[in-house]
Length: 309
Image (cartoon, rainbow, N blue to C red; front, side, top):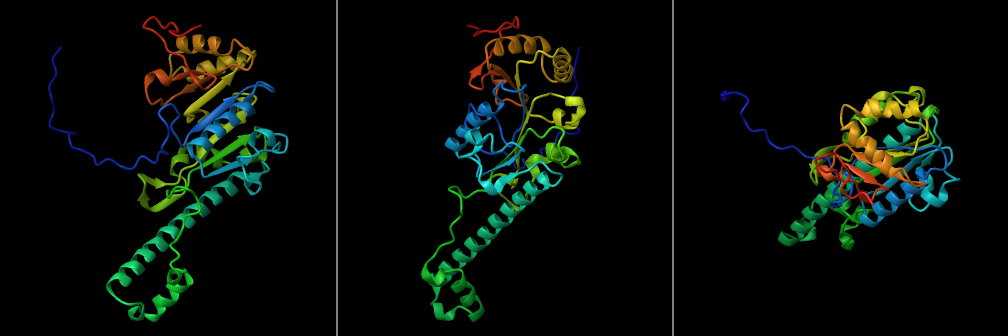
């Protein structure tokens, strides 16, 4: 065999913004599209609450939205992470309402940046001139923004960054919330929701992380296949329904090693409430399979689990 270099397609492309939220080394990348699948009483809500608690500790999300018909029943799990005004019934307008709120957050952030720029202009003018030399129309504007009282614009969240959000869809399979094409669009463009006029913090958009909690993986195709295929992380609890398991294996076969999947799944779900999480875009290869979110499942060269107890 020999190779020969061609003098074509060898240029350099300027790196673009990543649109990723900053996450800890052991955490999943975000904005994530996370599909959590488990029959009733397997522990989906509890697992989600663990992730919400970690996200709160890490200051990962500024807003969490919940679309669910059972929000009151799950207040013990989600209540302290989701404001009442950010809970929606799963009707045909629910997801649009969340997207609208993301865009409002974007508008408020850009307005804050504009005010901050005006504040800097005001302070620079004071350094070089007196207040009396500021044009009347500008002086009135500065007065209305509180600048004359030395009130620097303050952002409403702890970190000045494009707001970071999560939408949880819980018990919505078969509901009107999934009746349109918006979820499919979100699944393919969630990193680009809330486009910014100018990039900020290595992001050109706010993005929207999504978690979908379901009792069934495919559920008679009520969750569109493009949504499942765009999933970046999936968590599976034990499923005794063989056809569902075969469906999962069939759809995962194009992106992961099925032999590894079978062994990881058997290991992770062997105990009560045990679950397997697969990261399709891990930060490093050994982070692809996890048991109960916080135990890595690592394979040797023979596709055997290294850390099996």
